[in-house]
Length: 331
Ligand code: ASP
Image (cartoon, rainbow, N blue to C red; front, top):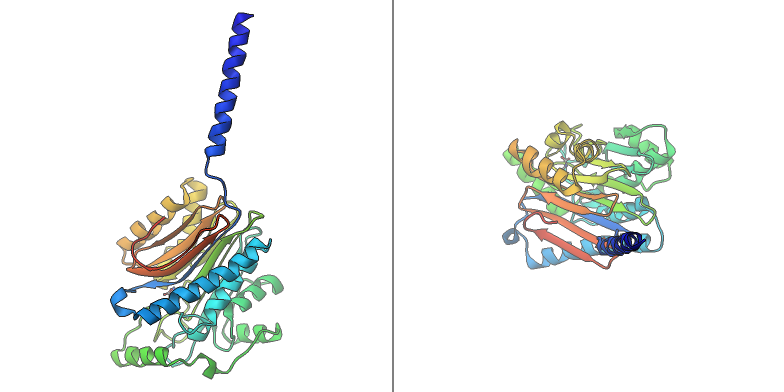
């Protein structure tokens, strides 16, 4: 009887200590939104203080717009769409308004989106009249039987969907034209950014989206990783949501976004380890420059890149908001 009392006492103590351990565990954030505006040779000495401020402000604006959706019970899909729209409408980033010019001096934009809940996806490639390619990618996912539409077919689908179609003059920016002229004179394809967003919403659903103008002076018809599901974009509620930026050919060959998800699924690696391995080890070793943003189903996130900088930012329901441009890969 005395023993039984002792056993009960010990059991009670164990239960109390388990409970306090539990409450000390990192609590799962209700929502997380991570965005990027492209990775590359982004050095402080090449960016004027005014330009730097403009980038930080625009990243903040995109985060706050997405946060507003997530904190009022909106979906991760809506939050990433809104954040990407804001970056597409800015001439600062290589997507939508600020898209770079291809060999023929026109824009050929790529975009994709994926819903982690259903693993449904939509994408467009080589479009040149759609104001917001991310909306076209979403329309492909939601209103067509297909995953990827290209060129004129994608442009006319977007028009039939009632999306805004613009004249080629809309995409003209002095900066991008200068870069195109330089690339043409040097006969050299230049790498140049992308925008993307990933989110976890309060229902536990993940989503990822990516939009880009690709590379300056790229060949007509060249398609990068951004509209390729598994390469530039991937989302699965069981693992993570990923959006990539960098030298697209390497990201396609290494199926980067899916590789990170697969390492989590089959090798049970934590998100950061999976992303570090793919970006800082595997890709870096073969000369594949770039980075990713990702969030997992528990709200852990990472912004991992092997370039000098990446325009990036994060906002979470615990009140964290942070935007950065330069420096090392962090958490
Ligand atoms: N990944 C994009 C592409 O290759 C470009 C970039 O992100 O810089 O089209």
